[in-house]
Length: 531
Image 1 (tube, one colour):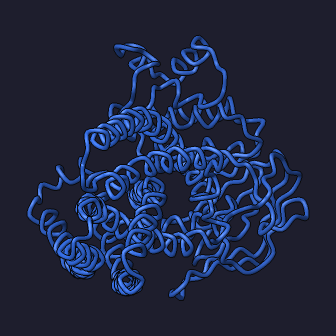
Image 2 (cartoon, one colour):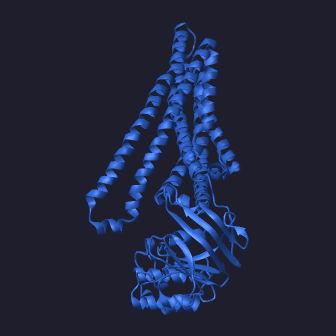
Image 3 (cartoon, one colour):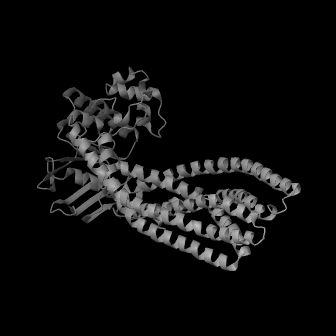
């Protein structure tokens, strides 16, 4: 399995899995030993002594299975729960290393759905009773062999044919499941997009459009799912037909022997008892194969997503950043963003101005290390950007807050007292937050829906400052703010960010006053302005 996705099975605890399999093997042996004893003791004449032995074996086996099942479920279910969380953690680590260029190709909800599906499938695979399948076949074919070698061979061939055809049909289903997952991605992308922006959906007040989009993609998923279901339904039908063959042959032989005076009552009872369980075993085997194929389809998708991870070394500080003869060209586009020369030294205050759509955001993303498809020279203290990246604090136009308390949003892993946080909030004139029911411990809701845009922007700036980076990018930090709030934000930046290296995208003249280097982007080209 590809190293980038080996978290699926790499994090399995072999010791715990082995213990689960041993307990399961013990329980399965006991379970199948009972009907097997029928072949030994359900013989004529059926005496009281034989009846007592059969009853004793049955009662002991039931007692052992009740106790064993308790410990198996307790041990295995706890481990599977623990393992699913390990999967989520490892998946998160991988996602966090994905280049932004890759992440931007997928809807966020898709990443959530895919790990939930992986966890579900792995649980199914780990819960499958593999030992039960082996023991069932051993007891069945041992009994068939004792009856007749011809019976044994014919039953073995029928079972082998059943497994071969099942795998053949399920292989075809595997091709279909990849199409289904691609279509489910389209559906989940649209659905999750509408759900995550439900406030915008309500404001637009165009229910018919959104419902029709959801219904159309849902119908496409249904049509793909029908093809998939057709494949494994055919496999189930074939399996149920072929599974009867060994038992049918065994029962016919036992009945013929019984008519010739041979005592086969125990064997007939054994087949009847085992046939019911054998149906469940084959169904589970089929379900396990389906789960493997579905996991394989997801694995192929993960390989394409995680084929390239960002493993660059992160630098916490720097002396000089140099961009020379840079050309950023987007795939399937003739648009080029050019930077002939940009030198950023420690403690510099760089101003970048220009109209919207000229490429300011692209240059910011390049400096952040989020763009890999560029030509030219980008060095950080003589280190190539393709090998290292800077730990940069960002105040972006997109304000994203987590569904946590105001304090947690501000501090993350920093240990900062309530008093200090309150001091900053007052300085930013966010006193209204302190009047909320839980003050700075108020949960802000998804994406900070309880707060206004101006409040979120100021919290965003304060959070960036509290992260205490050496270099910051301030991308239009005062956009969409009224004059008074804009002045508050500007004064905060001038006071607290003055000893930092700053790259500022703004038209605010007061912020520009602290800058020592000025650049303007025009005709998609960044040039230096001599002031």
